[in-house]
Amino acid sequence: MTFKPARLLIALLAVVAAPAFAQNIAVVNGKAIPSSRVDAVVKQVVAQGQQPDSPQLRELIKKDLIGREVMMQEAEKQGFGKDTAVKTQLENARQAIIINALVADFVKKNPVKDTDIKAEYDKFTAQAGDKEFHVRHILVETEAEANAVIAKLKGGAKFEELAKTSKDTGSASNGGDLDWATPSSFPKVFSDAFVALGKGQVTEKAVQTPNGFHVIKVDDIRPAKLPTLEEVKPQISEALTQKKLQAYQEEMVKKAKVQ
Image (cartoon, rainbow, N blue to C red):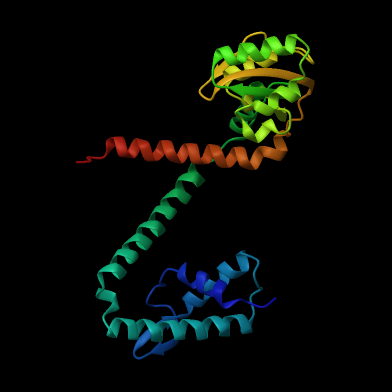
């Protein structure tokens, strides 16, 4: 595997300066580059599976560190280190590095438990329900228009034909088809209306949402095909971790003196 320079640059940017007493790989214009910096980059590269540790990799990193040190010295010489925009970027990078260290420590000390993941999964499945519905709808502007649609359906008109006039242009051309979905995929007032219907039935009354008035038909019903706990465990774990971090941050903000 070829070690790409761009990835090497990313690795180098992530490395924190090593102790001054470490053995040096080079001294550039009197400025020492400790060997521990090479070790740190190598460790990160190997951990990411980009390339195994080797003399060739270490030599490449050494050359790059020397090149970066030369560029850094020249940049400082030209005064870029005192540039306002550069200082702002440096402070932002410093904050990001320190905050990331805090976050990593918090996550390590406050891991998401399997019981919490299972509880969240159970909540999800309870909300989703054990059935999926193949639903169609016709969206109109007023309740009077919806009642007129219902009357036409009772008179023998085809739902798919009337749906062509629906305000929902995304489904109008498909006969108002909203495909298979669980009730939790829709606003509650909408789903409450169709879960009370049987296969082939249409709502007797117009259903109002912020989008307008709906006439809903259930084409079919089947057992829900929900993902297993193992399939969604990583996503649930990440969501719960983010929730913990948000609560942690909000608690610190409450305690802070913000003027």
